[in-house]
Length: 204
Image 1: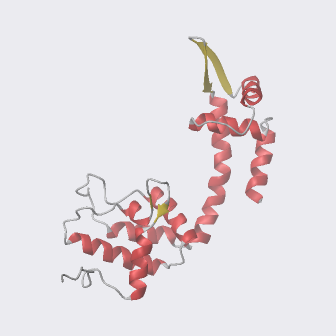
Image 2: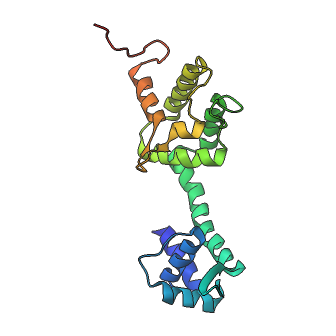
Image 3: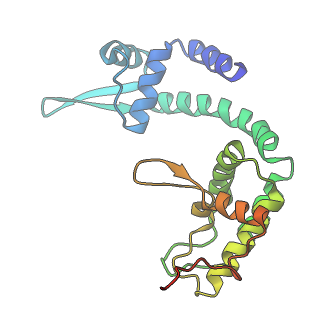
């Protein structure tokens, strides 16, 4: 509630409505705005100097002004400040140390797929935030699972191995987010080692 109230206060300080703000952010992300009357919002944003509207070949070309971009950055900063506190609550106070430890388990350089095995810290932080909000595992589980996963693929020269970020979470073609890391954490808890145990079909 505190974050949303802070957002509303800032929106009103900029002398625009929540609908105006929604349209401005959608313009910035280049996505459609089906939920509001765009014409009213655009007219207000133009009048306040947050967007420019120019006619070209009979079409209105809309661009966000520097003032509009400043507004977006200011509102984003509200969430950034709150997320700093939320990260330590969700992932533990030593989460950055643990993320670095996790990252260094993966080999330096590129995988056979051509992608770097070690994803940058910021991307890993966002993925782990989702992971710890979704699953009930400890950092000890995570680090053991990562070591087991990398050791397994090291034997195969890292062929088909996921990057450090995709191992945490990856969306399928239906936009469903799943975690290979969670599966390996389960194996750790069940005492299963992928190096010693492989499921094989029985040949009759």
